[in-house]
Structures are given as structure tokens and as C-alpha cells.
Length: 265
Image (cartoon, helix red, strand yellow):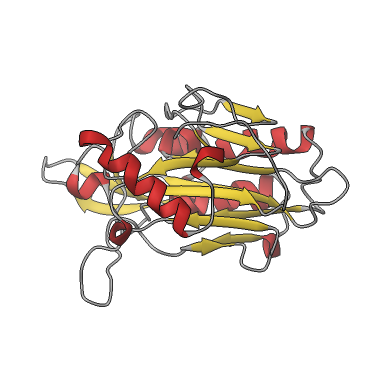
């Protein structure tokens, strides 16, 4: 799946189930099988694996800014990467990948970003943290920033309990309009559907002042989307709970002659 197709200077992609499990920065799989899948996927899309940096996710809101690829295996304990050089990537299942790109990369604005937005990141403002770091790096959010929200678990399939750790935290933060009745769960307790993608769109558009025409959002739900043959289209932690069964999301600036130090996936 590709994003920002109208921007020739950017490659932004998310793998699907058919591409194989991609693991994470800390889970290469048996004998490196998942690492091999990542390498093949990147090479197939002309993204050098040795110039790609993965975030070591912790379901937080920490953002790291990179000017070149570090030699470490990953950037630890971060859920967002802003880059002036290397391609940056994350692994997700039901969480949403967020992609950030400049409309015009000239005059020092060749900056990209990627973030992992699970429900803790959505509630704690990972999108806002990314926009702040991109602005500090020189990107004007109103004039020169495009944002894409990749597939994640949608309102149709994401439910929470009727307590303060479930629906209560969304209501307390003012997101009542993004919560709906989901009936009674198997445990006999009331459940609520939550529209995480809607919250992200609301934050980007109404709170962070990103023009609506510069935000694209994939409509697919990672839990229930199916291929034409009826098979699941994406991996889903809520559906299968298999460690390492992640999709890979990656963004890269397409600049000829770029050189970065080697980094391991």
C-alpha cells in the first residue's frame, strides 16, 4: 500500500499480510526469517535496507530526530522518528502508522517523519508531538506538510470496557463524539466502540491546523479487511495474537546521491 502518490520526492509504503510477517526491531524471527522478509520488501521497492532505521516502539510519545542513520540496531524507546536523511520505519499490527512529508522539499525542507499511533499514543498526542518536532526542524504545518494515516483497527472492531481505563479515558479527554455503543461483551459488561482514526483526523485537522486537503486516511480496518479471495488483508494482534506478525511501514526521501552511514534493521 502506497501513500503520497502525488509527491514524487517521497516513497511511503505499508506492507500487507501477503508480503509476509515483518517482525520488529527486536524480533528478527527464527534464524532471521522476519528480518529477511523486511529486507526483501525494502529492496523490492528500491529502498536500501542498510539506510533504513527502525523505531523500537514502547507505546509512548517520544520522538527522535535523525540527521543520519545511527549504527545501532534500532532507535530505542521511541514511537516517532523525524529524519533529514535515512529512511525511517516502524512495525504495526492494529496500531496506526502516521506518515509525514513535505509538499516542497527544497530550501532545507527535505524532512520526513513516521510515527506509531496505538491507543496510548493517540490519547497522549503522538501526532502533535510529531508536528511540533517537524516544525522545529523547519516544516511549516499550514503550508508545507502532508500527513497520511495508514490502516489500523477501525471503529467497527475496536471496543473498550465501561470503566475509567476503558471508555472513561476517552470521555475525560473530550472525545465523547468518537465513542459509540457496542452492546454487551462476553464478560457481561457493556462495551463501547472507539474511533481512533477519527480522533487522529480531528487532532490533525482541528487542533493542529493541518489543511484537510493535505491529510489522507486509509479506510481499511486491519482487523476485518479482506482480499478479493476472502482472506485477511492485514495482520491483526486482536485477531491472531502472534508475536512478530507485523506489517512494515516505511517512508523515504527520493534524493539522488544521498549517502548515510549503515544502520541495521
